[in-house]
Image (tube, rainbow, N blue to C red; front, side, top):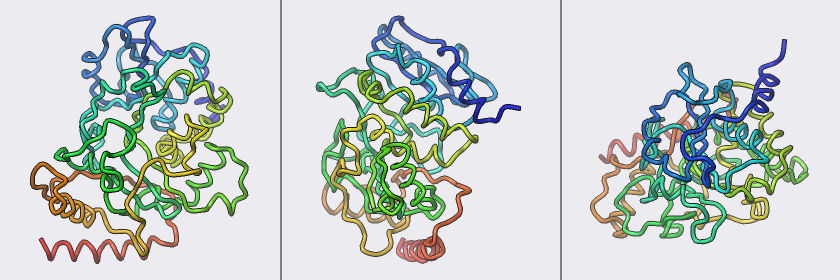
Length: 352
C-alpha cells in the first residue's frame, strides 16, 4: 500500500488545475480551498486574471482540482508550482479560500487577513512600483521563544498613517508589543521551527547549534502574497519538491505553520531574514512577553496617548493574530508562561 506521503506527492505531479477566467492570463490566482464560500471570486475574474482552484474539502468547488487533505495551504501552493513550473503566469497570487477582507479576529478562520487599507486588488497588480513581489507583512515571530508582534494595521482600521507595502508606515510604532500564546506552534516548537528554516528553506548547511541562534521572521498572516514568475523560477523545481515532501505527511502538520511564516524567504533567497530584519520592530522584552489580552490594552493605550489613530480605540475592539492548537510537545518555557498568562489577565480584569 502506498503511504499518504507518496500518494500526495504523486498527486502533486498530476494534471494542472482547471481555471476560471481569461486564458492566457497575465495573472494567475492560486486558491487553496477547503469549505469556504468562493462567491467573492466573480468580482475579480476579469480579463487577464485567471483563477486556479484547488479543493481539499468534502464538497470540492466547481471547476477545482481535488487534492488530498494534507499539508494545509502550503501543500496547495507547492503543488501548483511543481505542476506548472514550466508554464507559470508572469504574476501569481497565492491565497486561501476565505473572502479577502480586512483584519483577523482570533480563532475566526473566516476572517480575511488584509492589513492597513490594502485591497485584494493590490495583489492582482503585477510589478507594483517595479517590484517583483508583493508581501504585506502582518506578523513577526521571534524564535526560538516563539513570541509574536502584530502589525497594528490588522488590529484597527483607525490608523492615521498606513502603508500599502511590506512594512508599517510608522516603523516600529506600527507593530504591537511582543506577546505570546503558550499553545501556539511557534512558541511550543521554536527550536524545531528554526531547524526547519535553516535545513529546508535556506538549506544553508549550518550546524545544529548555529541553527538555534535567535532570529526574527516576519510573514503574511493567512499566507497571501504575490510573486513574479522569475521569483519562483529563482529556485529549481527540486527545491519545491523537497518542501512539498515536508508537508505531505499529515492533514495538519506543524511544518505547515512553519512554512506559512517563511514564504518571503522561500522566494527571496538573496535577502533571507537570517541576514537582517525586513522591518523595524518594537524592542524585544528583556523578560517574558505579555499575553494577548495585555497586548490589546497596551496597544490601545499607545494609539490613544500618542495620537496615532483617527479616533478613540478601545482595547476590546482590537483584532489579533490567530490562536491555534498543536500536538507538538511543549517547550521548557510553557509552565512558566502559562502561569504568567493567568497572572497578567487577572491584572487586566481588575483594571477594566
